[in-house]
Image (cartoon, rainbow, N blue to C red):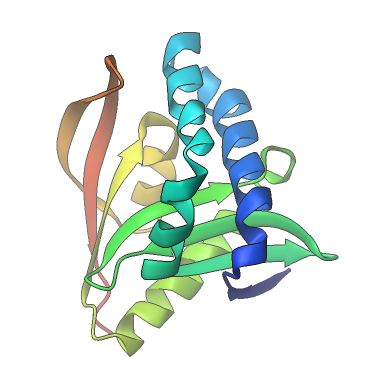
Length: 155
């Protein structure tokens, strides 16, 4: 597995990965309506590229195939972390997260926060993230539960 910075030509693969993962993997914790609403945000292509370019964004590749990606704002909010649906539980997200935490110190970030899905909550907890708050958020008239989680990454 190879971790590198995001390039604009990765965008379509990231959107496909995001949609496929949400529709398949997150379905175990969310309703069909919820995952379909969530996955539909990938249709807003014009919003994704600036978002990924403005953040610290990395991709994971294996044999030139995009198998994961993660992004974090420059003030330490972990925005996105997704693994391709067929590469779950193979260390992709763990490797990306470790890379992101190491890079955070390069930017003077000492605390990383995220809004973890039900699906990702245990993943983050196992890596030292503390649950701060359980939230219900509304996206396109659909309610979702997620968890505000934080970790001190002071080295």
